[in-house]
Length: 114
Image (tube, rainbow, N blue to C red; front, side, top):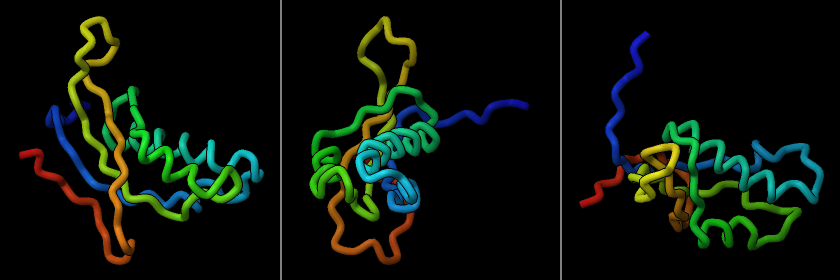
C-alpha cells in the first residue's frame, strides 16, 4: 500500500471534545490527561510525532484547575518545518488556542497562511 503524499505545510482548525477523553479519570489526573489527549489528537491529525503546545492553550486548559478541564477546546494545528538540522523529523505540529464564543456548528476548517 502506497502512503498518500500529504502537503508539507498545512494549518487547520479543530474542535477537540476533552470531556469524553477524560471521562472516568481520577480528579488529580484529569487536566494532565487533557494535555496528553491534545498531543495525541495532534499527532493523529497531522501525522507528526513532535507536537508543541502554545502557552496560551496550556493556560486555557489549566485555567479551571486540575479537577475540571474545559469541556471543549478549539485548536489551530499547524504543520511546520523543523529548523533544527539534527532533528529526527523534518516536520513538527504547533497547537494554538482559537478563541470562540460558541462551539455550535463548528467544523474542521483549512486556514490560509497568506
